[in-house]
Image 1: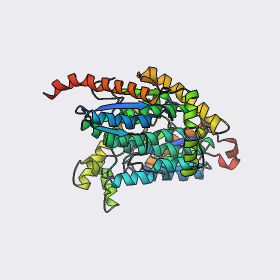
Image 2: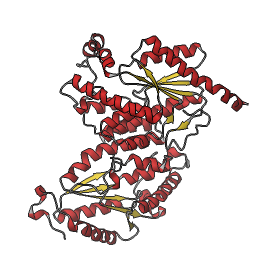
Image 3: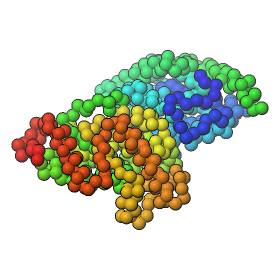
Image 4: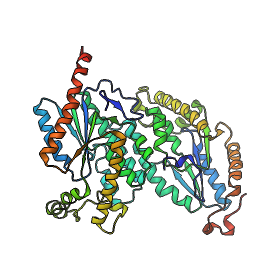
Length: 252
Length: 237
C-alpha cells in the first residue's frame, strides 16, 4: 500500500501527517486465529531488530472508558449507534496513540483495525459505503496482514475446555462463548453455537470481499504458530526495508 | 441506510424542525407553534438536541480532561443522535404524531465544520437521519443574537463560547467569532437543504403567523394513523 502515510478518506483536516515517519502495520482476522499471540512475538522480535514498537488493539480508549460496555449491557443499541460508538472509540485511539507513535517514528502493530469495524457493522445491517465514509478519518495502513482461518479450523480453537472454563467460571461471564462474537445480538441461531457458526461464516465472507477490495496480504492461519510467524516476519520486513532507500534522501 | 436522509421518510407522522444560532428565538417560536398545534387537536411530540444518557458522561469527561478532538466530538454527538433518533423520534413518527424538534442534524453540520471536520464527512455521518418534512431556519444578524444572549446571562460557558478553538482569550469576543462562523455555515446549509428562512428580527407574532401559514399548508394532506384518528383530534384552525 502507500509508502508514505495517507488518509483513507476525508481525513482529519486539522492534522498534518506529512511528518509521520513510522509505519502502520495491521494484523486482521476473526476471533481465535491467534492474532494477539503473534503480535506479542512480533513486537519482541522487532525490538531485538532495533525498531521501536507500539501496539494498539480494538478495545476501549481512554476517552470512552467503560461507555461501550455500559451501552452494550443494555442491549438496546441499534446499528447506527453501535457503529458510531466504535468509530468514536477508534478515533480517540488514532489521534491519541497511533498518530503520535507514528510521528515519533515507531512501528505501530495494530491488533485489528477499521476492517473489523466494517465487517461487524455490515453484518448488522449497516450500508457498506456509509461505514467506509464514516471511517474516512483513518490512516491507510502501510500493510494489512489478514490471518485467515476457515470455520472448521476455527471451531476447535474457540470451543475448548480451557477458554470455556476461563470465561464461564473465572471471568464470571456465565457463558462459554462471547455474546457479540457469536452474533447473539442478531439471534442467528437458536443457541450460542448455531449463532456463532452463522456469524463467523458471514464474517469470513465479508473479509474475503474486503481482501479483494483493499488488497490484504492473506496469511493462512491453520498452519503451525512458527510457520505463520515466519510468513508475518517476512511480510513485515519487506514493508520496513522497502522504505529505507526512500527515507534516506528525505532526511538530507 | 446511508441514503435514507436523501428520501422522504416513510412514516405516517410529520417531522418539523427549527434551526438557528443561539439567541435567534427559534425555541420561543417552536413553543408557540406547539401550543397552536395542540390546541388544534394534533398529537404533538417534542424533542430537542440534547445529550442522552448514553454518551453524556463520556462527553463531560472528555471536555474536562481536554481529550476531545473535533473528530471524536463529532462522532460522540452523532452516536448520541443515533440513539435519540431510535428511541425518541422514530417511535412517535411511526405512531403518526407531529414531532417538533428544537435543533436537528444541521446544528452538527454547522458546529462540527467550524471545529474543523470535513463538511462532506459530517454530512455522510448523519446519512441515517430522518429527513424533516419542514425545516425552519431563523436567520438573525450576529449582533442581535449576542445582545439577546448576553442580556439574559451572567457568564458564558467555556465550550459555548468556543473557547477551546483559541479564537480569543476574551469569552465575549470568542463567542462572537465562533457564532459568526456558525452563522456562515448555517447560511450555506439553509441553501443546500432548502430550509425555510424566517427573518428572526421581525416581531414574534409576525414570525409565528408566517410559520403557521406554512405548517397549515404542510398538514393539509396529513392523515393521522388510525389509532390517533379520533374525531376531536383532527382539526386545523
